[in-house]
Length: 184
Length: 186
Image (tube, rainbow over all chains, first blue to last red; front, side):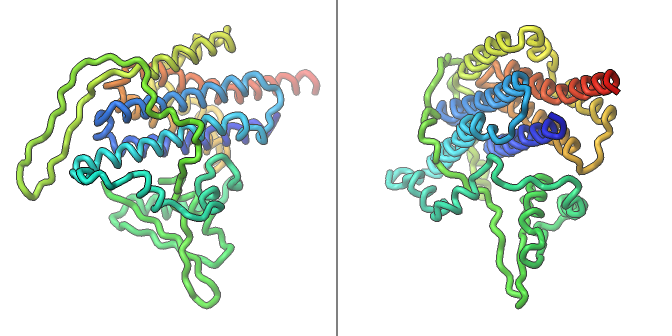
């Protein structure tokens, strides 16, 4: 097993970290948690997926003697996708509630689904790349991009609203952005 | 709350700037899971919806909602998963289900683990511990937020914390096993 075990934990807790960010998204709309029964059901179902993911991974890695990370997406991808699908449903529901509050739905011509479809990424490949949460992204090596952490912390502390980072192509902008996402 | 904006740019040899999109779009691609609005058993409790009156024209009224029903979806899921845990971990089930009663207990465990293993800053193990800590805090906050209409969420939270601790502990037990093995065969 050896180093694979830490890699497995990195993968599992990496997904949990993303799930945690999605929970933050839910919590930003806390005011609407009780706006409808549908929203409450979605929130409960999202929590159910979260528990299922945590317990299923625990059960799986307890039983297995050899850790194969290639199986991870096959085994748990469906549960994780299900959780993020709840997030999409929650977004649609909260949009609908907000529109209702603004009394914009009186004409009944506004379809949340159509608006969201129009706003979404049109290119299928790009859409798959952006929404892929399960690990096709290359893992960052240990101790890399650590230099950026102090800049990010400073940015979070001071009063500025924009942190401008520029660099040549291939200089690691994408890796830096992934670090920034983890540090927020 | 202040919104942070991070802009990342790539400059080419001519100094032309192009943006790097890092916005995480998602898609409705899981049609098989279209049961988001499916309702579990629910019981009515109170049905008042309070609308805050307009205090002034300048202040936009904010509608305040209150919990109207309890949902039992979580209870059903937790019960099913607990039964599964009892079947899968007959000897460790109590430790998983009741070993970590609060988020603080889990954070204490992480702190102890940090002291014990002293992970190098930026190492994989350090990252895993950070993520575990963040995840447990978010589960706690989320449980607080939904406890009004999902009263069984704390059982679910305990299950999550217990499983996370178990996952992190296995590493320790493996290390001890390796140590013993290496001592035996040295």
